[in-house]
Length: 156
Image (cartoon, rainbow, N blue to C red; front, side, top):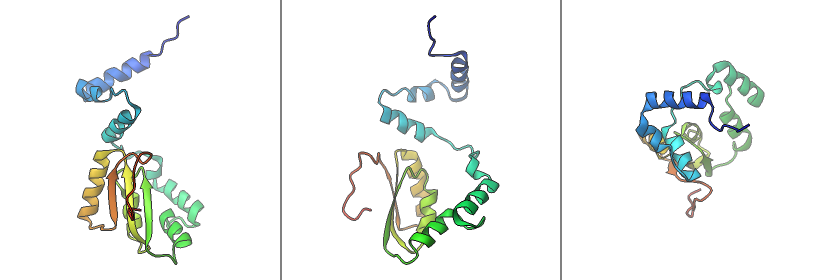
């Protein structure tokens, strides 16, 4: 019996995607190199705001387990426990997306340099825009593949 690699559900999902986004959008997804497919995927990703960590009860429980307090988030816990007596720290954040966590850490005086890196140029552009608007001078965002990146002296 022959094995089908494409199911009826796959065909239905394809038709639905064509109807929603059009052929041109789908054509951008047809890349042969894995790195190019990954970049296209993250450049076109749009969070629906439905991630499990967006639920306040989940975040509170997470905070309780990590920091022993529902209202004491993990970023404050980590900095308080591991960096409270430190200064002039550098941070590298791989897969930073639009840079939300980097902006949280930039509020701590312990960090003098934060480099956020992501393969998605669109996400990095948005992160840069938000950081510039809110005057986060310690953060640099870079669109790059961290497995192939060359870091300059003092960059991180």
